[in-house]
Image (cartoon, rainbow, N blue to C red):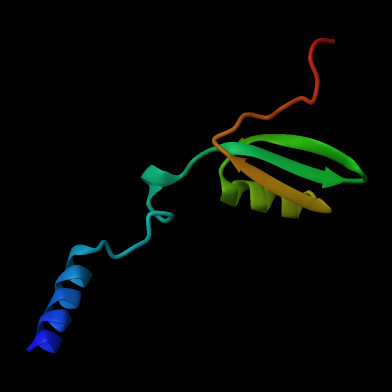
Length: 80
């Protein structure tokens, strides 16, 4: 009997969960700062989504890159 109730609970839970993950949902796609390092220089490519950042950095032949969710580009200094 307890085995049957556990099985029914798992079935009910699987029916209530959404089919896709929240990462696939366009409501949860955020912009962020996309940084590309090439020739020992670090540049911010702008406010991009993670997918756009990966694509642009691969096309730009960056040595290394990273993406900071919901953060603006930082110019590494104040004033001119």
